[in-house]
Image 1 (spheres, rainbow, N blue to C red):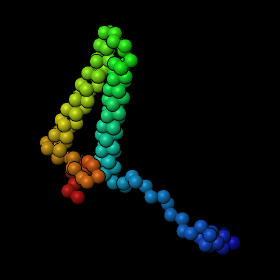
Image 2 (tube, one colour; image 1 turned 180 degrees about the vertical axis):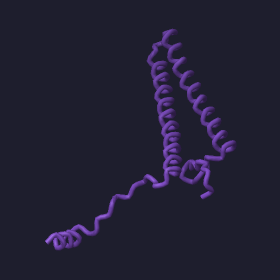
Image 3 (cartoon, rainbow, N blue to C red; image 1 turned 135 degrees about the vertical axis):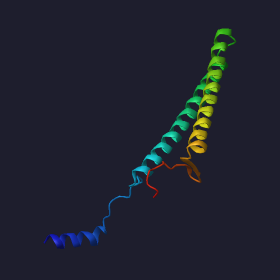
Length: 123
């Protein structure tokens, strides 16, 4: 009875396969993809935060009404946003230099960065 029910369900629903996961089975590859995703997420969050802070400073400057104190605060916000952007760029350049040129664990692929973590076996 159960076999007939299963055969009937295959006819109705087709063959059911487990969902395809984007997570690789190899832990070294998975860790590399996790690090790559983390770096890309950091860049995205830093860029959005910098842009919002820069726009907030510009908005504060526009609505300052010519008051020196408000203009000064707005200029400080804009300056801090630009300095933050430069710090993120310098950090990424240093990170790229250390991981790419010195350690050799980062590879530039068409779809972004690919991390190849060193291992003791030469597989």
